[in-house]
Image (tube, rainbow, N blue to C red; front, side, top):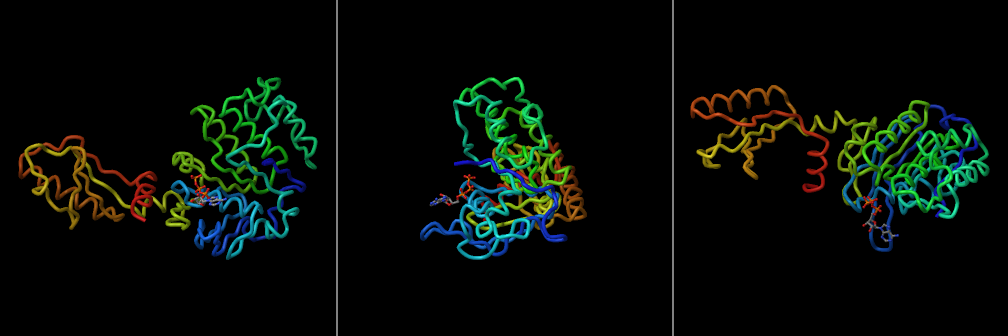
Length: 320
Ligand SMILES: Nc1ncnc2c1ncn2[C@@H]1O[C@H](COP(=O)(O)OP(=O)(O)OP(=O)(O)O)[C@@H](O)[C@H]1O
């Protein structure tokens, strides 16, 4: 499958004031199986929106509909104000995409690959060398694509998806297989693109990637969006937790309730999952410390913290 699309017009973000990407009540079935079950979201021009989710949640299916590879079973999608399936040529000339499986000719070198895709692009804002340098592959220019490592192939994929400076960029798990340094360099490339006005829809299994890059995100599970918002909103709604090492001299059923919350004891750790209200958390902590003093206990490894994106994700994955 060819995965590198090219841009034909300068960045204009489609219809003025309209979202760059609009998904309304999208459903997509494969035979009897409904992979996407009525999801809605919008991505504004110049925004990076991350779709997170469990395996098989429907992220790639959603991206494929947005790219115009398949029509919705129900609902509608718009990219730059157009229907990507019915008006495929218009949309695809202005979007870039990087799928999970890149479609390379393994016998070509990196430089030949970049030159080939640059030659067929109607817009050539960067030289072949600049394109390779941006993803730190200039020193691999003469290496055959099939000899690149997995992470290097992903970087080449990103270079090809962005060589025409697309208005909207779809990135499906862009940093899978990259080492931590390559991942950080790729984040910098993506940030530059967003900084220059590109709208990005990204899927990832790396929660840190979403935390680092996303203006807003949605967490999908089994075809539905379970939560969405900014990272701060999603995490704040989840609340706080108080944890400490389970004191050996206190049976689990003698641990106190804090603000009506019972503790969970697992792997030698006691955890109270509290709501998002900071006053409630403070009162719970005061009550816990008073209880510890009354019982002459030292609470080791005591911590109070806000939920992380990982906590939220795991709750969606297990609880939804
Ligand atoms: N062509 C297909 N035919 C039948 N079922 C499919 C097809 N493509 C995807 N599915 C199913 O649809 C569901 C959603 O798949 P999809 O690839 O969209 O999930 P995902 O969120 O991208 O998953 P992952 O994180 O594992 O890549 C899965 O249960 C998958 O098995």
